[in-house]
Structure formats: structure tokens, C-alpha cells
Amino acid sequence: MRVVVLGAGVIGVTTAWYLTEAGHQVTVIDRQPEPALETSFANGGQISAGHAEPWARPGVLPKMIRWLGREDAPLLFRPRLSLAQWEWGLRFLRECLPGRLERNTRDLVGLALYSRECLLELREQTGIEYDQLSRGILHFCTDERDFEALARHAAAMRALGIEREVKGAAECLALEPALRHSRVPLVGGIYTPQDESGDAHAFTLALANMARERGASFLHQRAVEAIDAAADSVTGIRLKGVGGERIDADAYVVSLGSYSPLLLAPLGVRIPVYPLKGYSVTLPLPDAAGDAMPSVSLTDEAHKIVITRLGTRLRSAGTAELTGYDTGVNPVRCDAIVARLRQLFPSLATVQDITYWAGLRPATPNNVPIIGRTRLRNLFLNTGHGTLGWTLACGSARALADLVSGRRPQAKFGFL
Image (tube, rainbow, N blue to C red; front, side, top):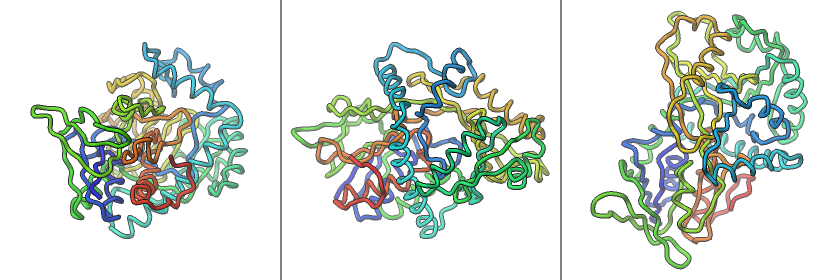
């Protein structure tokens, strides 16, 4: 079949790859001059199947109350005159109720484990390089209550097939010696040895090139005006610009991240996706850093940030801000990440060449992505991955390619 994929981020490009591998004629459309220049450009770098859990949970509500009014809070809500924002916020609160966490976690874990298998297979098949490290993720705590909560939850996650090892402070320091220099003492953590890290931007660029070599077409600097539909199917894509360029196909996949609901609404297809702005900072590693810089990907429970080594760079990302489609960089939030890094790794105190970045994560209230067929028989969705887009990309894309091809996906997940 001829398939059009809207969006060339990590989700759109992996979707194009697996559709091409399934024998389809694929065209990818994106408004940027090359792939992965928006949300996939500078994320935290973690491929964290062992931490595939929703943000929405009972324990987050007391923390949200404590964070109110703090400009550097891990989760910041900026009220706007937006019905979509308030609807999303109320649905998020509902997903925090007891009983919903287990269901949402089961869906995420099933897809995450499958996605990890798909990525390993893809890497073996193609030899793709993206500054990957297969050294696990250490989720560390500097507060005893946080550590106790993580340790209790580890047993529940192991029951779902996630390997989580509870580590004391000394064991954490043995896993990551760079934390010995921290000005904030560790009390313990959780280690997921099968997790990985890597540069999502580099991965997406490389995979796009491989997809082109196998026959996929990429139309860049093309913004979509509308999706045309008649009766029960899509009839084509209208592009913005002089001449009203139009592209038709047999099937269409929307992978436009936070912008997906804006394009789908005129069709009567409504999805609970809202932008959740996240920030990252990227620093060059100091010369002769040695063991003063981490080589294991880290998650800081207290500040809700991730820290990943990407070749000769250190990337730290986190925080969430509900502020609509504003992509501006807030220096206060980025400075808070840098300040925490310098607490944990004092040798970064003199590093000044720091790159700030912000991107819009396409979040659903329960953090579970939306994958599958819509009420229009040839319109498919692969969007809403939130903070787990890099983690879930390969599995989501391969499953979507199966659905388009009329096959049953292998992943344990609630597809549309």
C-alpha cells in the first residue's frame, strides 16, 4: 500500500521504517528541514523500559500541592484560557485515583518490554549508532522516604516482568563512582540493569537515512493544512502554501506529537493529548573528567531529572510545564537543572558552554500512548507518548505497521 506518515520525529521515523520493512510505499511529511528537530531533538536520552510508569498516581497529588507557586517546581501548571488544558488537567487528576495506576502501568510495561526487544533487533540488523550505552539506569534517592517508597514499589514492578534491584547507598556508589563526589549524600536507589541510553536525535537521523535507502520518501518543509475525508475514510492531505499541494495514499498515520489533536479535531477524531513542556541542558564533559562524570544513566528522584552521558556530552532533562504550545526556554527552570548537576558533580562548576532546550511532549492524562485505527478506516494514530517516546518508539512503530498490514501486534497493549 501507499502510506503517508505525518511527522518525522522519533515516532514518525520509526513508523516509516517498519512500514517500509513491511513492504509498503511510504512518504513522510514534516514541516522541519530534517527529521527530529522538535520534541526528539534533545530529550533525556534514556531508553527506560524498567521505568515505564505513569506520572499520574495517588502519591503525586501531595507533591503537586507543595510545588504550587514554585517557578522551579518539577511540575508547573500555568493556567490558560484553554478548555483543552483544563480538561486534560481534570482527567490527569482522575487518573491519580487508586486502582488506575496498575492498569496504566501494565499497558506501559507491556509495550516498553516489546519495544526494547525491537530496538535490540533493529540494532543487530542494521548496526545503527547513536552514542548508545547499555549500562542500565540507576534511579537514586537523597531522601529516606523516597527510597522506601521506591523499594516498596520495586516488588510490584518485578511481578510485571521488570527487573529492579534495590541498592543501598554504598552499592549505588559502586555502580556509579562519579556520585562519590556529590555534595548531597545518597541513601539508596533502584537499578534496572537492562535499560539503556542514547541520543534520540542521532538515532532518528540515522534511521531516516536507512529508510530512504530502502525506498521511503521524505518531504520536508511541508506543513499540513488539513486532512480531507469523505464518508468513512481519508481522501488526501492538503499542504500549506501556494498552489495547495495535495497528496493522496491508501493509508495515513498521524505522528505529529502534541500537534496531533489540532489536525484531528476537524475530522471529529478527538484524543486527550496536550503538550507537556520539558527542558534539557547539554554540557561538554570537562577535559580529563575521568570518574568524576557518570557513565551509568541516572534518574534523580528528588528533582525529577534524568542525567545521561552522550559521547563527549552530558545531557540532563526533566520538569514538566503545562503552558500550552509555548516552546520558549525558561532560564529559571534550566538554571535549576544546572544547579542540581553541580551539586551532584562539583567538577561541572566551571563549565560554562551550556545549551538550553525546551520541547513539547505529547502527553495523555494516563501517560499511555494512543496507537491504532480511528473511526476512519484508513486513518491510524501513533502519538501521545509523553516522556516515553524514545523508550516506546520501536515497539509502537512495529505494532502500528502490523495494524496497517492487517496483522495482530505482538505487544501486550490496548491498541485502538
